[in-house]
Length: 369
Image 1 (cartoon, rainbow, N blue to C red):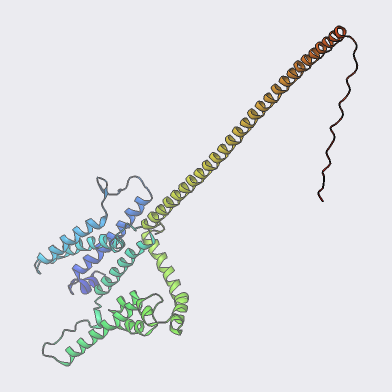
Image 2: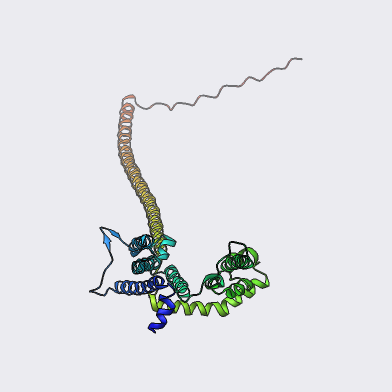
């Protein structure tokens, strides 16, 4: 094993790449272990790094380590292989910290444990795959040790044409939504040919540009997506969650959207309750005014009836008293008249009764002849 390592890694000059590859994997695994323990609230382990009220993500430390490792690698002379390996290790550790929060950089939001956070694991897996292929000695575009001939030989022209063709096939494969096929195909060009010939994935840019929703190609792409792609995606998600933890939290923007929706619903409920209370108060005020008006009218009618009754009762008493007084006065006057008449008759004596005068004779009208 040691001789194989010396032959395949040390003697071929891939020791710095091996340091980068090892540091990258170890840092990623340790980072995921630490963050999963922090998420589980396990006591005795490291907690979140904070600067006051600001949470410092480990991508910040990754950027610093990448800067230090990159500058050190550029400043180290070629003869100092050990220093170059140390710089590669530092760069690999920083790269792992940065790519572990690749989703945060992509979405500019803390989506570490959400479904969007799986983009970080995908980026890490891509980096590991590319680094592993380079470490195994597999060069991009299928040429291990081909060097273009500046004199313009057939080999140089062939290398240039194959490179352009592979790049074109890689772009087509990526536009068809086949990310892994396009990346791995840079090292195995046969995969680029297969990915470029087969139908695009539904929802990919190539599918939106060239496939009609009712076309046979689009329907075939949907069937293949359901039959083959979905099981592979579920298997990949299982592996990702086994290594990096479950991404089952609700994204912050959805939480904020839900909070805003709940706040709007609460405000609508408050406004509706206020409108109902105002309408109820208006109805109560109208009913109270109506009751007061009815009570006022009843009091006025009762007072009017009392006054009328009192007036009718007063006039009746006055009429009775007046009639009594008139009757009494008439009786007294009659008595007095009859007594005076008897006295006068005794004084004058008997006399003939007066004769009634004859009515005057009417003069008959005379006619002229």
